[in-house]
Length: 183
Image (cartoon, rainbow, N blue to C red):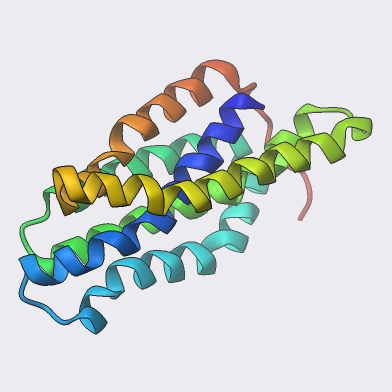
């Protein structure tokens, strides 16, 4: 449960904290806020629109596989975003990162529920949603401090070590699953 909870936390923390970097991004790239908002909006749109397809992909090839690949994409997207030389590259990298976030978010709850008996489902859902809530509340707080002290790039780059911890944890701890046989 801790592995999945950390994954949920990292994914949501990244999603909610980016808004505090937008004014500094606008200044850095001499862009308007409406244009810079695509850094956050594009990520949310890609993530939201791919949740159901990624859940279905997980039914076909296995939840752990999609979850792990999702973290690889999420980490690569965070790195590319933080190192991007232009606003267009930042937006493109965030769109790419949103694919990984969808793969993570589409599977976390399902894997947690599959790991515990039905009698524990209430606790599992409560713990999972607590981590989502902590990520949602913590994202702006952590990102605000990071932007103030380290700049806008660090907001994106902090997803790399957090993602690596989650990725390694998922590879080592989560049980392999078999693909679903439903059509």
